[in-house]
Image (cartoon, rainbow, N blue to C red; front, side):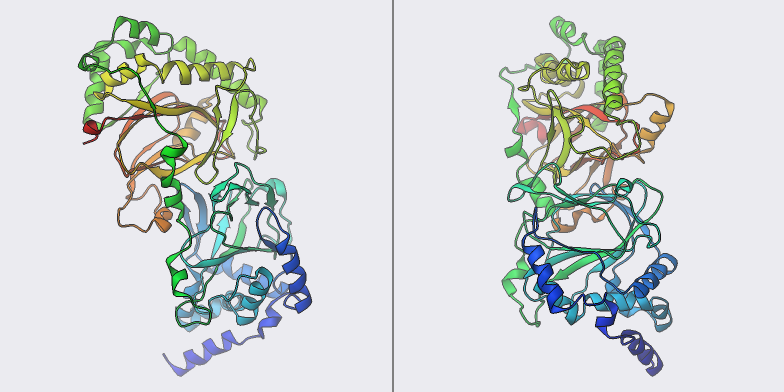
Length: 549
């Protein structure tokens, strides 16, 4: 490196005293004590909101540099959709002429990780010393449709999470624009509620930060529903690294399981399989009983009771381990059911492109199912009283009388050549702007998935929206690398090498998939731009050990 380059970088770093980068009196002892008191009293967990953080002139320059000099990449996984830059910790590695174009951003980064501001954060939160060497931040743009689902930020050595908003300073962000930071209470440690109790809409020059609290600091970012950028700088302060004051070797091992581990650990405990009481003989692999046909004909399209068609279906499934059967329900039943679900979506205003309120549609037998860091959707709880709603009646029939029946078990045996021994599942309503399931895998067995999708599809435009996958609602099966760090498993987008199968949301389509152990599955968050709810009946069937080999 030349002496000229060294001098250029030195001038960038020392352009102004650190205190001048912040809003007047922000770092004063009086302000620090006031914020510490507010922090200690905050709910649902400890967090702090500062309305004016950075010097106004500096932050406007930062915003201009970000929007004109940085390249953003769209990143999408099961848990988020966002436009993001690379790690800004690498700014120091840029050539001097490139760094000069980002001088204000560089100044902001150095101010945030300065000794003065780290002490301020430590004093307000009482979290102890923070690393001076480990910087961890990026810039993000949430555009129309972008979102971040529920998680607790527990990865590696993170101690404090923060976000600094750089929304348009001359056009205030409105709550109805979406993009709010949502904070969730816990039912018990590690189990967040299904709905947040605090919602913080983004505002220019506002910072929100909180101590990463394993099993408690659950949060999400509401979907943005306007055509303007929700720009922010976000990142983490880390615990002291080796060689730094306050370093503790045992802390480096982590204090809590990562997100993927949390998702996998209790699947069976939360929702165990119900075992069939009768054995199914080998004859079930060859054909249906007359009584089975009589039972199934109430719901199924007659062509899926024709032995010749079923043998063709079976051949394809055995060869490919998956199949989609269109027009699965008979025309009469499907017409009444789909009319009822459309009326329910219209009643709840879920056919309109806006964020619904939490709790929308929760009535009668429909109950919101969580916990939110694993999934959120409405499901039928048969123990709740009837309310006379037709959509509920028809969906409950499919759940209680079809998918769990002995006749459907024998139909599955004929189609898949597998004799299932147990089942679990729900009739679900996945609401736009609210619902999803995150990627999970069964680590000890293969499973047969049977999902009847009944997405609200009133016209051809709705068909195109669902089939294009832009509004979510699709099911994705993806491989999990056995050697991959579970803390960062969501770094690969589902359209990259990890995706094994993607099934778009459809209307009256049954999907059968033989899912091997370790294969992860999720249903993508339903965007508020979707034409309505993704209604479905989603069951998993347990296979005998010998059929998993």
